[in-house]
Amino acid sequence: MREETTAPYVSDDPVQQEILNLAEQWAKALVSNDARKIGSFMSDDWVIVGQNGITGKRDFLHFVESGDLTHEAMELIGEARVQIYGDTVVLTGRVTNNGHYKGEPFSADEWTTDVFLRREGRWLCVLSHITPV
Image (cartoon, rainbow, N blue to C red):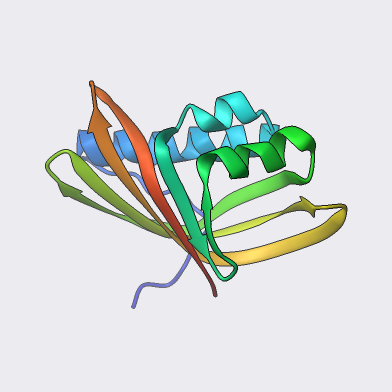
């Protein structure tokens, strides 16, 4: 097992690096709390699966638009794993984040998996899964 670091993962593979850059941009969008910007990284049928079940894109973005869900920080811890299967990519990594949900502060340390599909020349996330560390 590799020792975890806070240095970002860099790859020589252009698709892997494109996905890592995309994930970094998406994290910045989440911290900006701009629902339109966040949604631009997701397919229309995107869902997130977590300890509270499944939430679709529309509901997730509604939480952001209403101010019920805000993020103040989101950071990749250690190296991410990027697996490419043609026009599908699976990105797995450890992410810490914090913010507020319905006025209550939260802090999370999670293993995350995002599945991206290349559609019409661009990568969109179709599924996110989070598991507490």
